Image 1 (cartoon, helix red, strand yellow):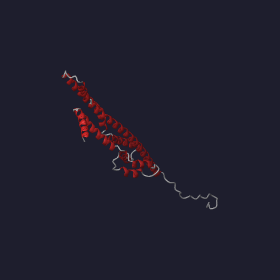
Image 2 (cartoon, one colour; image 1 turned 180 degrees about the horizontal axis):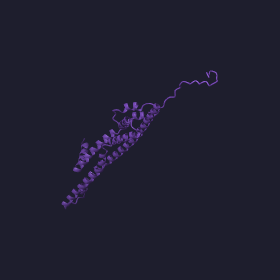
Image 3 (cartoon, helix red, strand yellow; image 1 turned 120 degrees about the vertical axis):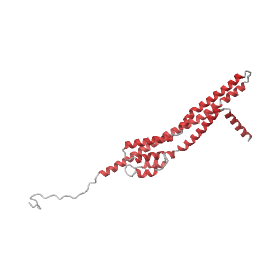
Image 4 (cartoon, helix red, strand yellow; image 1 turned 60 degrees about the horizontal axis):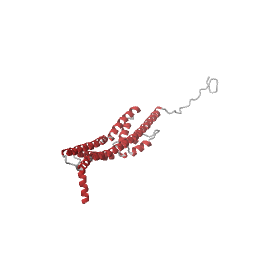
Length: 245
């Protein structure tokens, strides 16, 4: 227990010597940690691209069946980016294919913005955390050298080194915050790009199969089956048996 208490005391002194800038850095660390946890939970693949919807799209047969009857019950009311995009595409099958694709693309851009929510805060923290650390270090060095200038009799280099090390503590904390935030931001951005490409591929495949089904049903309604009909008996010619003339 004494060892643990001593460890906590040293950690407290390390953060306390940073002053006001250390408080700002700790606030940045708390915000960054919250965003990383929330985005990590929200960007799970099964919550963005449900496997069941992906499986049903891959099983769609352009030569038969009804895509709306198969997919609409799966996507209605489901809180997933792919489900909402697919639902928009199914609801506008009465439009032309190009118009439907534009509508789906608009919805997809909105879903990507929702997936990226909060990542800009990580990007800001990546930029300002090292700057806050550097500003804290400079402010600490100013205080150290101001004290040295006021005391002409100070000649102990250990005191000077101790003051400089305390001033650089904010720089250490700032970099320690920025590096994990940069890693998390890069990871989440790449993950969103990958899932966006997968959703685009699935939706394009679904629309192609849906409009192929629609085209085949329209062709089947227009074409009329050739009936056997009643065969006409040939008319007897003149001067032939059976002719009245």
